[in-house]
Image (cartoon, rainbow, N blue to C red; front, side, top):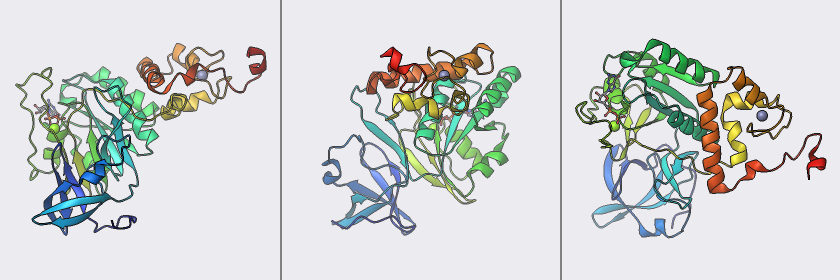
Length: 328
Ligand SMILES: Nc1nc2c(ncn2[C@@H]2O[C@H](COP(=O)(O)OP(=O)(O)O)[C@@H](O)[C@H]2O)c(=O)[nH]1
Ligand SMILES: [Mg+2]
Ligand SMILES: [Zn+2]
């Protein structure tokens, strides 16, 4: 087995992964590759040993290539596996410069909880994120302004686009140029349409508008890497219905909502969870409508979910503060 070193530019790159097969780019050519059984041997928390964006070590086996090992990753974007109680991780992409969280502000309607779950996960993984609000051609002006304001307050870069009307494409292209980006968001928000609008040679499959958005049919069933003509690359991913963060300790969640982190410095307890503690600056801001209720609801929902998986550390008495001895 080769010694595992840091990846180089010209190491084979995984450009497509689906249930059974994998494609790698080697010397500028895309070729199928098989996953060696031993990649699955070390029973880890990971559901999938290889993800798009991974640099790998290959060997030739008769007529096919096989992946022997995955080179060290500089970062990874992951979620908790769907429909499974086990705390396992599904790696969605590796070695990326940013996650582009794509949302619809038309049909399907904007879901702040989905966006907030993905944004908190990016923060935890230390991957920069950009929020794209697509289908602005279908949006109500007031609603759109409110969403924009919430996310600017949360420190997000917010881009407004319409893939079908070709609005905001220059701004999106500037945000993508020269970087490796993952496009992530609910099924039907327009990820593939945006890619096609950016580069007409791509011709990704797009779901027909006639298909019910409730049908849950996913047009894209695999993740795939696409180089951009202008430099950089974009990873198109299958749509998701539920995004559950993996591995965020419940007491750390408050640090991954930037506006809560900022407000939290004024709470009475440094470890305030902003739930029912006295003199909580987050709760006051909420009361005075200086913090959007949707962001706070997302925080609480996620906190409870994470406590359900990792234990209820959030209910512990604050470790510091003037009266912590008296409370024991
Ligand atoms: N009105 C409108 N429809 C859009 C826009 N972008 C995508 N769509 C439509 O939304 C549907 C789903 O698009 P698709 O790219 O397959 O979504 P994906 O699942 O996120 O890849 C298709 O019918 C698109 O034509 C947009 O900006 N405005
Ligand atoms: Mg798609
Ligand atoms: Zn607080």
